[in-house]
Length: 177
Image (cartoon, rainbow, N blue to C red; front, side, top):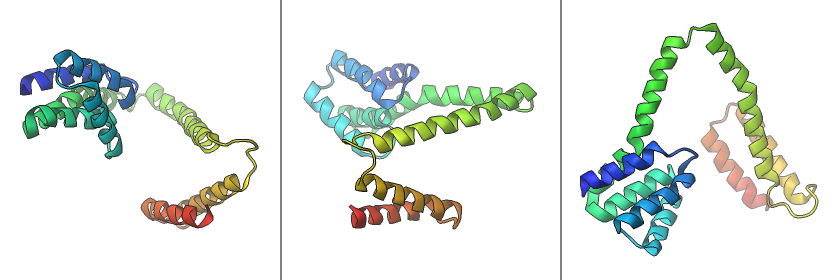
């Protein structure tokens, strides 16, 4: 059973592009084909995996492995889903180390910074305005912008630790909302 878990999750790990949520359907297919669990049990595992810190795909693999073969199964499934990504990252790192002094590579990374920054800003704005009904100018948005601005000042100007800023933001959200 341990080898079977390892091989199934290596196969899943090899095609796990698009993040953890994109892989859940593949994991469900593999689990149902093997007859390891029904859809209800699988949904419970995915729900639990989503609440735990870390990647939902890795957490799901770990919980499935544990449910099928105990601690050894959890280890086999976790190693299986992580191993392909680990090998790919190591290969890219070796390749990058050899090319990091290349002017074209350095220039391309400088060119990618504004794109990545723009994508992150877009995601933040989209997240901030999603779920807003009616006008975007509301007391809720004003409170959110106040908390956001306060966080920015605390981190950038006063160098407050991000964990403390998160806790302060939670308190501010309780007080304001």
